[in-house]
Length: 450
Image (cartoon, rainbow, N blue to C red):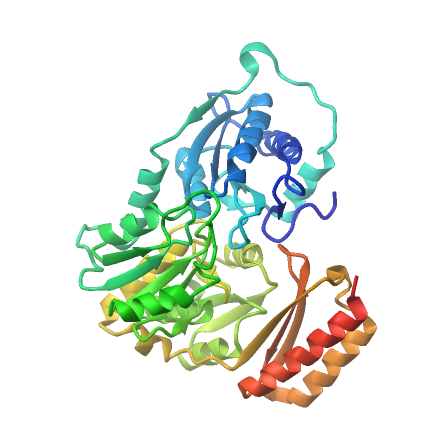
């Protein structure tokens, strides 16, 4: 049980790793811990939502049943992005929230993620509390003390209104004149994403927004940008934005179809916030995966950078601890704590486009201010991801680092959400980065094979 929670909740193959039994037990333990401090006059309640995966239907039912069995009422928000559930938890004053989603993972996977009161992710200590009582016998409520389950159909509209209000408090439609292609990955943002952008004034061309339970992330979304790149060019749009399955991340494409990654998005937003005097602490919080080019660009603009471990939860912890407003990951998780409690892809898209409108500049022009060193990333599967510090692998890493010297860097890390090791190398040229990454991947395969 010590490894049940990864860097982003519990995740695995639905109905094998993530079964109805697991969902039921986990929701009971989670509900008992997260509702224990409830001080409201009425019975505690929780918000439950999911992405568009077919397995989310039975998992949602199991989770809701488990929560209600602890005497906590359930508001079922249905299909809603992960950050939308977090926002609803905050706005309604719920004791906690639960999202059923595997984010960018393929459709057969699914996952369970909790939000504490206020819509914030759980820290390790709280997860440990939940695991400690996972198999514990407990005194179940009966009669009128059991929880009730009800639908909460207003959640999507309320969340959309929140998104638009963050960029358009005065109803001036600030994105008017911008044409954007929105790739919803057949996921949770299929309705609210295009709606929010349209309400803020943009002309929106919608792509991959016809979820059928099986097509989430299937060749589309933030992990498959090819279709978006082509459509942006074909429609002569100003940009494209792509969400993942639960819409907690956003990547972009400029008018020529070139990818603008999370590091560049964060850099663009940081410069814009500094100009407005809204970059608290004059600091951008990043992770070890962020490109060295981002730090160099921030140095140029007099913006400090702080680095955390990989995972947006660690970015969030540092932001909360030091009062920073902006942080995120290269993958497109961007946290803007003046507007939400967690990474929000739709929020990111809105603010990126508002920066374009305010500066009266193209996305390509803004992205050019955040040059990226060539970076190669290899995901090595079929290996023991818990042995990343193997002596022979470490020796090979040291050798590559010595060769790169100060012209690049190396990072090996076990994925927190998938059974693999990520090998990342930055170097002066693409060929050098790729060659060294493949060299290290081969070492990982040789010494850590299962």
